[in-house]
Amino acid sequence: MRTHAEHKKWVEFWLSDQDWNRVLAVWHSALRAEGALPSYPSLFRTVALCDPANPTGRPSQPAWWPRNGFDDLHLKAQMHLDDHPGTTGIVDAHPRFLTGPKKTIQFLWTHREEQEQLVAIFLNALLFPRLHSRHKGRDPVTAQVPSEALSELDGWAARKWLSEGQRTGWHYSCDDVVPEFGRSCGTQIKNMDDVVRQLAKEHVAVLNRWQPVALEYRAEPDARIASRISAVRAAR
Image (cartoon, rainbow, N blue to C red; front, side, top):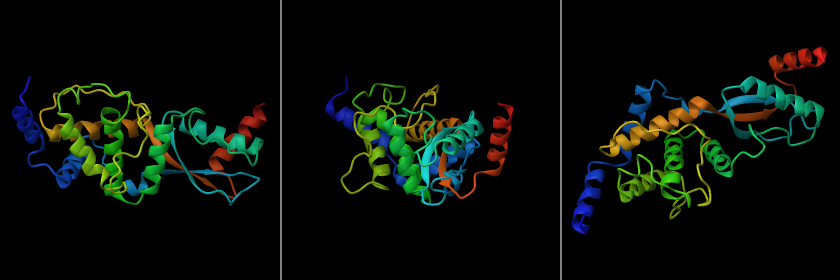
């Protein structure tokens, strides 16, 4: 059990030589090491849909779509609008997609042209269940890093995109605020750079499984999907 003075020194060790610029540098270095440095302005993939009842009047809508089965979901979404024009249609991959990830994709969409803010949102989202959720528990990161140091990192990121004084963008009742991606941490966390590298790896794992999309409603459906729909209906 550390004394108060020892604990203070321990926290200072984790935060020594750290600031937001270093966090960004380590984050991007970690992504390059994973071979997955994304071009954030093109983070969102466009999904063209046509609502026959309202072909051009609907705003773009962001969502998380799974990379596995992406085209099948696109097909299903267009067929739904063909059969039920004027309805909301299929937006999320699952009807009961969790509130937390829905808010996150809205935040990412709002800041889609701002690379630094996107990094900050991903960092805050991955730290949220460790710091703010009422269901928070210990994991390989929180078990090794003082909460004060994680909170400082969380605050650096939050100040890049949240209003002054706002600690988090999500309600404490949320669990994870990114889609499920199979979180794991097989390496020992020895310093704050390791924390940032771990969060960058988790970010890659999320985007390897889930694609941020922008549903765009147009006068004509996607030609490739329309061709598949014709084949499906002809086979019935």
